[in-house]
Image 1 (spheres, helix red, strand yellow):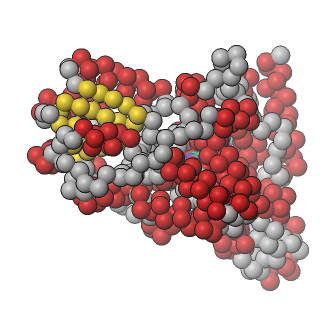
Image 2: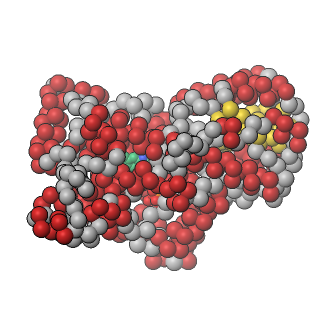
Length: 479
Ligand SMILES: Cc1cc2nc3c(=O)[nH]c(=O)nc-3n(C[C@H](O)[C@H](O)[C@H](O)COP(=O)(O)OP(=O)(O)OC[C@H]3O[C@@H](n4cnc5c(N)ncnc54)[C@H](O)[C@@H]3O)c2cc1C
């Protein structure tokens, strides 16, 4: 009898309920990861890069406990079926996923494995509150974040996170079943565009723990006031680690709570940070109840929005060549490092949807491909929030002004200058609106609009009026 642990979005040893349960059985264990290119959605390039390194790191951690990670690639159901037939597996454990395609797959597999006489058990390992347990007073799903989170906080009693096992009873013969990590072909080759990602990140459980420690020591105090300033190192940068489950949410929660006990001055910042974790919970919750969230507007009226569908505008936005420095800085940060600051994600997304009138789904797809933290739930809910089409979203008519946003959150242009170096000599008075600068100032700063840096693709005021007109057209179609 052997116990299979199927790793998915939980690439860690610490506080991993499925792994711990397998270890508790005392049976020899088989740690498995299946790269199923289709399910639930093909990963984007940056996520594939992250996954490669995260799997490598998980394997190294398992080796320290005397085990190896068994890698497989292909259709999950066929692979599990073949493994169960070729190895003496009696128990299968995994941590749950929450998108409906994965839920359907897991339910079918569980039923099949049980039918074959195996013990099969799943656990809560990647969110804090399971969606089916959270309902409002009318026994309906919440649609608004604040009451959702208030309700969650009332039930925030979690099991104490459990440390990684100190050793594992590994079923050695299963090594022969493993494919090599390189054969999964997750890394870019020609061209190798991942240099910026390598510089910025340390994927894996150790990287996640180091990141959390730095955040608690240096970022948490002032999180509330600084988190909107993209040049400030005030946010945790934990998003890709959370996406791949390299850190346990219970561990994160416990560390923040225990830290604030020692330092009560952190109270407000800690609450605010946990509230952002709450937004992650809410996104997973929405995806659970609205499986089409990544592709279909939650608000039915938005399905008729008159988008422009212009590939040239999309390209300019993707490349960070819109002529609006804060947008371009964000898009270039994304392309180079696989991550963009939350405030800038909102500004850049709003610009694509409202200034350029492109479908939010196009932006969602680009982020899906380029973000190391690309997350089915968070990405979709972020885009729908900005578009105004989501549950509890920012109203459509609230259109971000990229100049004022830049001046407010990047007043001296530090962030813009880092990612748009062709503007580095421009004074802070014009850094967010170079086209308003006089010719002499531009020449002194080495800027030639339309040559060294693009002229703005659209005029903000006019674009705002067009966007509001498009919104009226959409409403008219519905009425
Ligand atoms: C258009 C758009 C797309 C987005 N796409 C993604 C995505 O694919 N993956 C992703 O993880 N986040 C996404 N976000 C949310 C947010 O921008 C990132 O989670 C955040 O910038 C990550 O940086 P951090 O870890 O330093 O965040 P922190 O401020 O340190 O927050 C801690 C954690 O809370 C969660 N979180 C924070 N803000 C949000 C939010 N608004 N919604 C949901 N969870 C949140 C994340 O897991 C984050 O790591 C998106 C936001 C927008 C506006």
